[in-house]
Length: 98
Image (cartoon, rainbow, N blue to C red; front, side, top):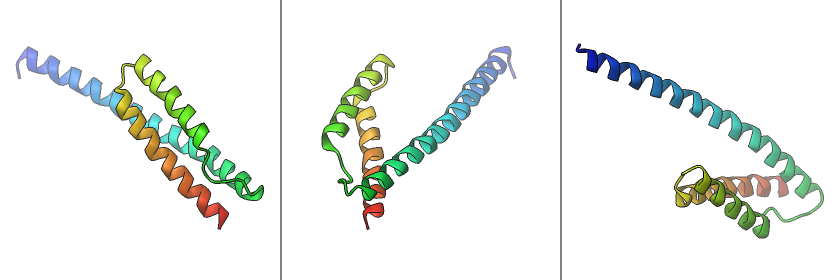
């Protein structure tokens, strides 16, 4: 292997280590987030509140779109990702309502 190829392989390994670490952070962060949304779902069910809060959801999407801009992340991707999470949370809240 040439010096350039060796350097490239080392850089690739470093990037992959970072990606693996960040993937773990994402999974654990989502797990923590869902613990809180589950608690919200139980609270809503206990107090007969609707499983969805469109004004809160719109505010969150706006806030996270701004954060995505600041982080140089495609805002459309951030919106799609958050909408996916919100729909999952609403489904969990509906299960608590049953």
